[in-house]
Image 1 (cartoon, rainbow over the protein chains, first blue to last red):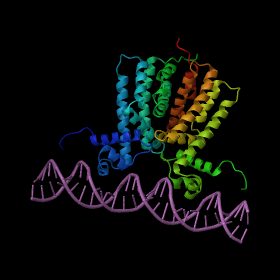
Image 2: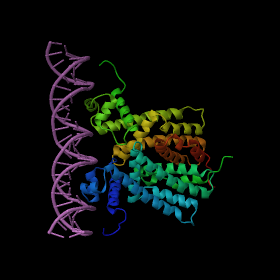
Image 3: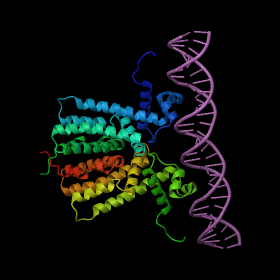
Image 4: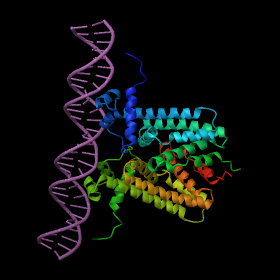
Length: 190
Length: 190
DNA sequence: CTCATTACATTACACTTGTAATGGAGGTGG
DNA sequence: CCACCTCCATTACAAGTGTAATGTAATGAG
């Protein structure tokens, strides 16, 4: 072998192609030939690198989830910013405001339907959700709100709704600050 | 003609069949023969009652949206209950906690993907959203929260996330009271 | 009665789907 | 040189897709 590559650059290229097709796509999963054309390869190459179509889709899901999770961790890592600033950055990072994030959003939404029946996809949904809840919960904890994990759960659900609204109605449909106001300025009803 | 029927009982039966298939379904839209089998008819009958498949899916979407909106209006109509009680009832009415509501949720989620490209489906998403925002906003107004329409938008987005979580993770993943606490007990940051 | 219409059932068709099978180019080890 | 492997391109195929076309039983009008 000539060199140790990063784990399969071709596979990630195909995964990106799937994301692009799903983003500007007709809702349903694209066909093999369409994916091959978008990725600039042939269906034979696809078959060589992926055992089956579902294997390919699952890899595409993992790929986009990992990229997104990495960016989220980078956003929530540095220390000098307030919990509110970090939370705002995380939320905005998850909104489909450019091509890459729109692709990730479309991928995530497309795979939710599969997750209702296919346990492999459901496992990834749970895993990605756990990562997000952990990041959010940590910030709510830092902010000293009464029930951090409940706040994290709620915010993650708001984000889900924001992503669909942003996808279908544009960026004006989301109000990040208003949400954080209500989640951060919450005092216990004594 | 023997009698004036309600507008096309067969069509609504087919729409219900689509909902059932989408609920317990494999994520993607079912085929014509599958729909026909579930509805107990043949594909010829489907072709007779619907001009095309998209026409049928659109009718199914309208059907489930209308049923759901009717129940929501019924929930928010009667007067003696507090805004919080009404809001809680609305939210719970939208969660997939039984077969009918699970079918409606699956239908709604399945059609969001189509809405990104097909303007007909997008229009219905906007319309259904307006109805919900109106109902929610009225209750927040009654409750006297600072920005009722913002609260309604946020709650509608929370509901969207709750529906997916409830579908994929079960009813324990949603916390209606915690959300309403944070949206109703919000005071202006003076 | 005839004729027309409704409401389907059945069949047929063009097309797409994922995948299997085959073949070949290019490097590599012996 | 030769076998051998990876990496693909091409072709082929069986199954499934939405829909057009055709047939047909029931029903109602005139």
